[in-house]
Image 1: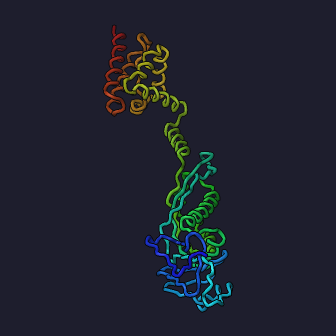
Image 2 (image 1 turned 90 degrees about the vertical axis):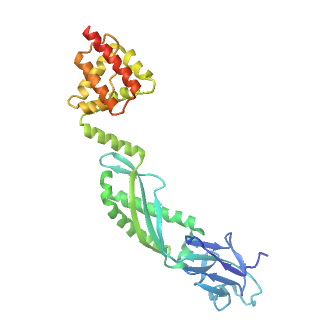
Length: 345
């Protein structure tokens, strides 16, 4: 026979436990005369065979046929307390739980008018409390088999994410318009959740949406779209990307990659680079200087004096902005000056 339980209680030092079962691993043996100690803000619910039976409020209670009418009737306790009966006690915290966190465990995929498809994450907070302890225990412990606070919080978050996804999908608004709709989305979601929580014996007292953020892939698509919009010309944008890649290679420590690109590629690359700079950055001298570091072509490349002087100006500006090291700056400047000297001779 299992150990007879003479006193049962639950001391929650953190104040964060919503539901707790005693004994923790399943039914224990009680008898008439056993005591149940219930602390302030708690209720104790006798639970047996998936059903919530009698409920005790704060205080010390001695089990008798008087204060256990339902349980006594079910078990036929007419033995003077000598025969133990198996049961569990579910302690329920009745205080309000505020600043509860919720979030989407996986990104939500939505159709977007501007980007075609967007993957979003959302986060927020909510507050609630137990309104009907018997209903709460029957629905949560009896129907869902939940006996711990962590499992309950996971269950509630799943409900929240489902309702939030429904509301967000029904908005059919562009991703960039969502920040102005946080309050509207939160109110609509809370309206659906109130009924869900009430069905569990809970009262939802507050619900907030704090952020909707794109995944890294969606954020990159937004950045690319913004960059293209700022440039306004796709051809110039592609040339901008190519020139910047060449400049970044030249700025690598040691300069080997830059030297290989600048000097080993020969006349074709030198002329092509000069043409790229002239077409992509006409009228945007300051932007071109920040975007690319020109590489000196091989000796004898058909560049004009004006092109070489423009390349030197761009190189000076990138160095003054701290975009290339002094070592690379001196090396590249010397090569351009040598090229300029060949024109003078």
